[in-house]
Length: 266
Length: 266
Image (cartoon, rainbow over all chains, first blue to last red; front, side):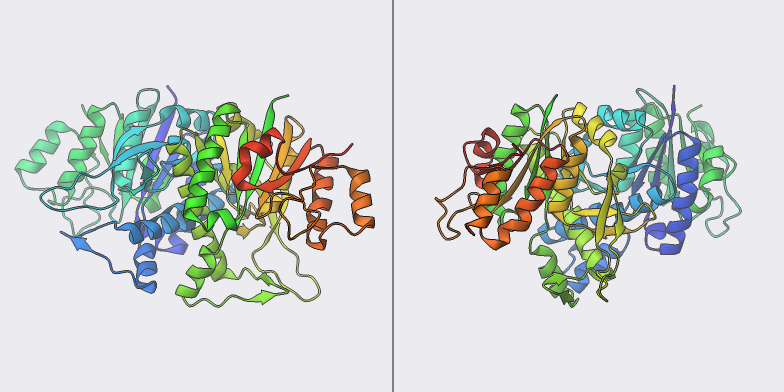
């Protein structure tokens, strides 16, 4: 089975031009070494919020989540699918990596539905994923292309939808697992899952279901990590081989398994 | 040889939500009837200018042409490659047409270089096309996908470039002519090349090199059409089978040859 790495990068990299450039150079090297078996999923960063401010569009927030109204969706589409996605693709191309940027609408890559309003909260144009088009991804991966996914999907009825990048990474990794040996890499600010949230040297190298239970029982895991780890195990149960959590700056070491936290189901 | 139609739509359609929706529905029907042998190239419309105004970015103009400075390029990338391209793709998908939206950076579809400054005029981040990647287009067309090209290319050194949509359509049609029977359709406000620019019923059905010479000698062609027609003949000399000029609202009739002006090289 061919190896595929689905790699998610977040705002801390996207908002920092210098960091992003270093990351994309490392990513291109890995992509070439792995014959294009890489999928990059990027989040949004702060540019959309800054754009909305500049244009005088007020951001509605509910429980710390931004509500995607029609004007916000317009900005999200411009910034995520346009500015960020195309600049990442152009930089990867400059580094010799044959990248192609897609939203979920392109080639019907990811079909979603508008999130159902719950307890009176209407999330607006937020997408919950129904299906990832592995046939399209396989065609592109077979051509040694590197797919770069923006956090925008569609409902196949003409509506674009703002969609969480972590979820896109997870659903893409799960869907590709039917045909590939898939590793899912989540990058964030820390070096991995930490025993002491304030000490970046306390990375837990490996977590499996029994050690996870132990860590939770002993309350050794930062509460904020628990949903991420629960999602990681859900991905493993759906066929993903490994989930790796760590710093984007250490991409090569995350792929080779010498840095970050590797979550496995055995 | 498989038939391919490269179709360019301009601002008059893009800026009018209702017209665009009707056009995309007709386009999808044609795409399905022609088994995906359609390539759509879209221009920018007025949204980029409105965005720039909202954000307080002044537009530099030289000889009626907008200069693409760094801030303008950012907006062009957001609006053309993000908002317009992805909304067109989502609407085509809703109409059963498997569209995929690309800039020149995606899969290195179109490589360009930054326009060389001439007579002291620096055009900024404007792209002149060097190469169209027909291999990528063939892979997508073979999958019955409909390619939707945004007027943004790259220089393969990491720089995105604002690129004229007419030129993208022309260069794409020329490049595809090596492998396909290509018709190039330019849509604009009028029903075709007119004998009387004020009377939309005076469409010239067909122009060939000898009738073109005659029309020019008799000064029967509106001066503004001459560069378009010269470009059309240049495309025919590079292997394009037909160039058709007419109204986007009559797409089906343009394809079947009953409306618009057909320019042929015989």
